[in-house]
Structures are given as C-alpha cells and as structure tokens.
Image 1: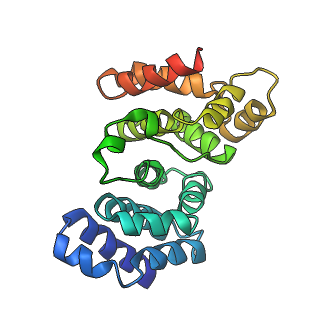
Image 2: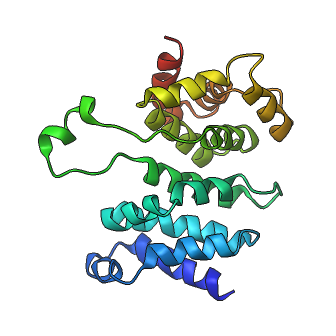
Length: 221
C-alpha cells in the first residue's frame, strides 16, 4: 500500500541517518504522518511494522521528532501495534515495536551535562498498565533475542519511576487482576514481569543479564 511504502521510506531514511536529510525532514510533519498512518490502518501489519521501524529510527536521530511522537500518543499507538491480534508472522512487528517503544520511553535528552551525567535527575514517564502487560506478553510469546533484549531495556527504563515499579510488582501478586488478565491473554502459565525477566536472562545471558538483574533487584526490595 501507499501508506506502507511511505513508512518503509521514512524507516530507511532514519536508518541511514543522513543529518542533512533528517534536518530537512523535521519541518515536514514526518512524525505526524507516521502516527496518522498507523492509527488509520490498525489491521495492516505492514503499516504497523514499518511505522514502528520509522518511529524508532527517526526518534534515535531527532529529539524534536521524538518529542512530537510522544506528544501525539506515540507510546499508546506503538503499544497497540505490539499487542494486536496474534498470528505467526507478528514476530518482526513485535521486534520493531519494542525497539520503537525503547526509543520513545528514553528520558528527554539534555545539553546540560550536569543533568545528563547525574542519574538522580533522570525521570521516566509513568505509563499505563497496558504497556507493562504488552511488553510482558511479547517476552513470553517470542523467545527471540531482540524481543528479550528490548523487553529488558524497557523494564529497566520504567523501573526509574516508582509508580511503574508498583505496576510491575502488581503482576507478581497471585490474586492480582493483572495476573489474571495476562494469563488469559497469553495462554501461558508464566505471566509475571519477574518470570519474563528471569527467562530472558536464562535465554540470552550476554544480552539480557545486566538489565534483567537491575530490574529484579528493584522489584525484590
């Protein structure tokens, strides 16, 4: 489709990272176009996959476009894409979606070195519980290195916010409605953030152990 082709083009331009091209793109509403395409074609896996890819590559190179994505509900749109209807071909979409979510959840970049180097000043937004559950279910369903690695990174980012930690801990309560929801959605007995992190560490220790253990230490306090 034309929309999918447009997302592929923007994804590739962001991937190539040509600073002159990216600078010109900032003034032509690229971020808005990607999000509008994804919202308008929720059932098109190609649009969702390459839309997530474009959001990821462009947000890595342009803070202004990343800010626009966040302000226009980019986290919600990507979360919805990752958590869409399950099928055998969704693995690449989920991979790109988690990469995009990682980029969008990063703290705002600052030119102030005193802030940039002081982790006590770094804040991460409070997210909706759906983000916690969608990432968890993606890690349960797809034992792929990219999915596990970015799932751990996302939880590490979210763990910088106390409210997010409370939400993650809530999945660990046996009687929690969130655990029941996750069990129903995943069809899998392993359905807590803790279990997802432990399995990621076991599957890919080189890529996941550091992030997973940091989050597990916080959840265990």
